[in-house]
Amino acid sequence: MFADQGAHVVIAGRSLETISEVANRNKGTAIVCDVSKFEDVQAMFNKAKSITGKVDILINNAGIPGPVAPIAEVNIDQWKTCAEINLFGAMYCMREAARIMCEQGSGSIINMSSLMGIQGYP
Image (cartoon, rainbow, N blue to C red; front, side, top):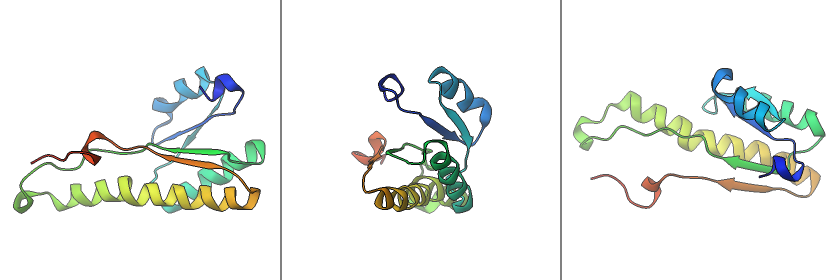
């Protein structure tokens, strides 16, 4: 929808092969970025800003399912990875987008979630 309205859309993800098709279809740019790594997020926003000189909208949609198990059996490494992507990754992206948007005086941040945000598993 944004591309149809003339926006230059940046598609970010951990693997170029998974994001290139979407970026090409929308005449946008694919940028490899692991949102759990702050340095990747900073580099992605720097590159995104360099394309048009601004960042108008962030759609925060990166996320993975966490481990579903009774708490005494939860795999802590999987839980940590989920938090790094879903929580820290969202914050890193919001922070970097907000810095640019505050500087330019405008912008919107849209945070997406899954149904687990409404109703969790037992």
